Image (cartoon, rainbow, N blue to C red):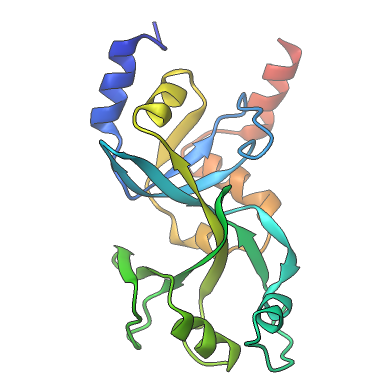
Length: 196
């Protein structure tokens, strides 16, 4: 039976980062409902990642100007809420286009990097730096064994990272597209859940 301690232990051994965590249609947690998380780290000390499809109530230009970095540009791409942990800390997820490497910069998967560098934000504000990127405020985090327990309860599905989902501007479609990528029709599942 799913939910038993041995199921959580099995999931702990199978879960590897990086991967996508896709909220199951039955997950009704306010923040994580219909979310897609890029899982960045998973180990004995816990699990962390960034939510890919929670838009913040401001655009990139507004945020950069508020941080004293903007020059009155018109970059209206969304800023994302990466999770409820350290919500004022920014992370930039960007495609590796063969350009400069930044401090506090790590490779997530080949062709994709993550940085907390102010130098990168300064370049973005000046219209330089990577062309394909997302700015995330905060991150998602789970304590030791917490995510495995949620997975054993059926709250999360996993998939390989899909670079096409990472910089989508249509947050409402990211969850549906992530589920479709693993062969699940979200509309059918949600309808069955409601009728049950």
